[in-house]
Amino acid sequence: MNVSEETLVSALALLSVRGLGIIRLRRLLVEFGSPDGVISADVELLSQSVGDTVAKRIKRSIDNPILEKMVKKIRQSNANTLIWGQPGYPNHLKSIPKAPPILFVIGEILPQDSRAVAVVGTRRPTHNGKIAATRISKELASAGITIVSGLAVGIDGYAHRAALDAGGRTIAVLASGPDIIYPPEHRALAGKIIENGALISEFLPGTPPEGFNFPRRNRIISGISLGVLVVEAGERSGALITADHAAEQGREVFAVPGPPSSPQSRGTNKLIKNGARLTTSAQDIIEALELPTLSPEKLDMVMEKVEKLTGAAKILFEELSSEPVHINDLARKCKMDVSYALPVLSTLEFEGLVMRLPGMRFVKNI
Image (cartoon, rainbow, N blue to C red; front, side, top):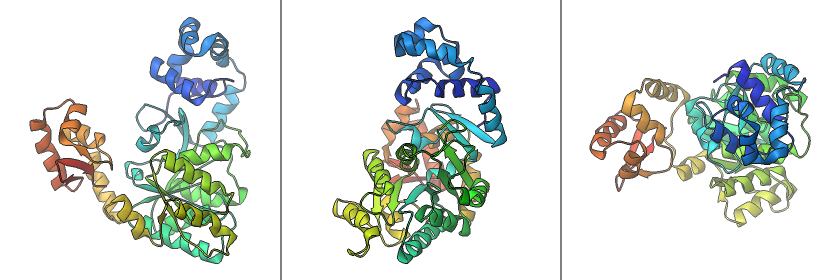
């Protein structure tokens, strides 16, 4: 969702405050409710959370003359602003330890993008790596799964293009501000991604794609996804950082095996040796994640049903995820009696939106 001009200015101001890190900014958003609430809070209250020095910087940040230029860049790039803890922020991403407090999104993140798998790898793929990335990404996209990657040359680019060629959705996470497309040769690809997915950035407008931004970017790639597939990676590849983030976040890690003699396969083979799932097809991923297979057309029909949900059905469905939850726990979280929640879940099950597992556990079926 887009935010008001006041909220956008406040968000940009907070992101520009030196010494205000991700964890502390998220804590302030919880405490004061919104970027506007943080900016307008008394300096004494802010000091209790972040100390006198940073509190004073927060109060001064709203007067930064560069804010007007940054707002203009955000508007020119047609980026929406998502705030952690508020509607529209991706569900999977908000649960990771270092979730970005503020996201800029060009395009649209849809509910079906919760069925996402990241496909990453080397910038210098072999012929076999290109074929594997293209084939598996296309199979996943054809099954209604959103492909997430980093818009880099190499495996990332092949993954994004394959998803688009399959008529599916894809999300690119940037290591730069939302107004800077990197690499420049992927500007046309970025435009197509915006039409069938989204570009995401946590960085202020004007931020160049500097080297230390990429590891930060990679935690978002894994965090927004159910699992990460590494197609090819050398021993020092950035794709391995994404795999490390995935493991830390409780995501599944998949890897395509390659010849021991290939430098591009040393990283992936090591991942498999250390416990990543050996993967040669999309079906390996779909089965491991227990995802129902839906064509993009069928997924659109299912999402129409989701958008029409109201009342208890909407509350229960939104609380469910791909992780099984017992009916007692679900009812308690939704503040309902089990006797009331169960018939509603049965209706959702009949509609194909929910799956009942043994032991009275439930999961989303999309």
